[in-house]
Image (cartoon, rainbow, N blue to C red):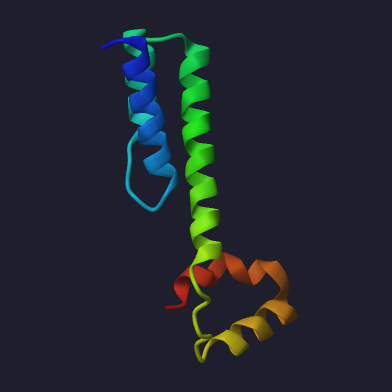
Amino acid sequence: MSDALALASLLGSSFLSATLLPGSSEALLIALLLAKKASVYSLIIAASVGNTLGGLTNIFLGRLLPLKRQGRWHDTAITWLNRLGPAVLLFSWLCR
């Protein structure tokens, strides 16, 4: 595998991992580091660029899609958040 192919595959894997799709960019990064397929700095930069582009894609898609209608629990959740503060978010994953 050439350096360019290793960097492109890491960039693609980290891009997909930063979006909603499952990916294994960390495993690929470690495998490429152990195989010494490219320099450490270029691998880290490729992974960082891929993660950043994936995050920006999520932001773009979130702003592009229309807002969903608020459910019946929205007012209750806002009341709890105003009353209890950000600490209530610690247990927000339990409610559903």
